[in-house]
Length: 349
Length: 252
Image (cartoon, rainbow over the protein chains, first blue to last red):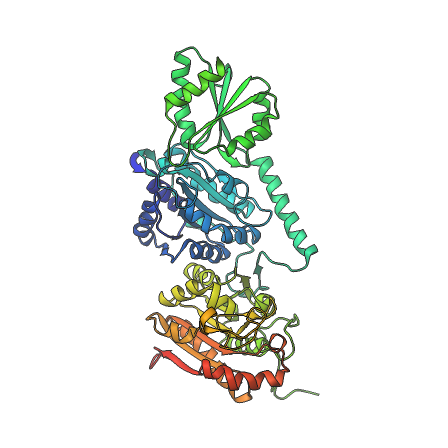
């Protein structure tokens, strides 16, 4: 049965159904409804909701709760995600699984509260210190976002990594019909063999991101890199939409990809064959597939709600096999279908 | 020869790893006290410790317990996450004055204010030890450090912050006491205080903290014995010993 739900609330409910019973958060627009939903819902499912004193505290609460091997999550928006970067680096180093929802808004600084995609660098390139990565998933509909929550927890625990669901204020705030995912039974969750639970009858366990001996720390880092390599090999996801006969392929993710799908219909009606390549995992980025596609298409247009962040990865994938163009608006301004169609027409002509 | 009675031994909750602390530093004494208390209460199997950033960053390895190291100042938030996930476990943080009274003030204040059912061992030696003796928020007025080479000046640097007194004003704080370990008598008093703090947590009464005034002979530029005297003569004037809040009457 489909339900009409707001993006933030649908994501929250899907996380609970995926087995999350620990949520820590701090209010920030445009995602406060997610925090509020958890405040109301967690007690109903015997879970824990805690409003922290800051995003700095939130991420460290997440660190502590994740140490116990439980499914934990938080949600925030861009300025809050910046404050969490310290803890994210520590959690990545301690190989802790957890889910972050970043409902992006316009920046930099206090910016505004309108939709944006300008946290791409921060999410995919490492916003905190050290050589680390986090898995970044970018849904473009509420249905896709809710379906993703179980997968996000599965990935986090399989690889002992952080997973960010990167959406913008549009997906966070919009309402649309959603088929909610099935419930994951709590008994399906097994306590990991690294969890800190009190050393009852076993050797004490230590979970840290720390070793003062550079050769020991290097070993830890090489282990992280090995994990990242496996994820890059096994977990890349993308969608291809009408690219078979395309004379120009647009690369876009999230809300922008959704708008581009509308543009493709307009363009094709006026005789321009446009396709869409939509990365679903922003990290690991689908370099290989995009590289193949670029061999058969003359023009690639990257469209973002930023001044050009993902386009750098697109260029790395394409390696000048085709011409890479860019169109973007940021600061909370969402490009219209007409603007994008104009950008396409300028290139094709 | 059979042993009739063991009168002294290493606490089981300490690991075999050698302490890395300087001669005359009080971390070792306080570690031992905490470990003895955990042994005596029989709670090692359900205790998780959160070490800080600072000299005691290695504490996670010195205790034979499940443990982690928090980011600088964030131990109370990490402990909160653990306690909320596993309410029946015993969670304690071990923090220095740079960690707790400077960079981590927000985390400790709000953990205490929530009445978070955790225990904090707070080592106050009036300097940053690990980084080489810089001024801490607890540095005494006039005290010379590497970043207050002319002595701490209230006009430029403010005043020594009294965390125990401050946190005691919060309704969530169940038990807060300040002690020192300069004499055997004081060691016994500190152990009783630490034990009480853990009992507060076991009874679910709320936030408990024991502040232990400690020496740092290396960074104070004194011998261990001179340091003890300096602590007793000077630090206790700014940081008086005592119980600042006790909401356990009739409950422990």
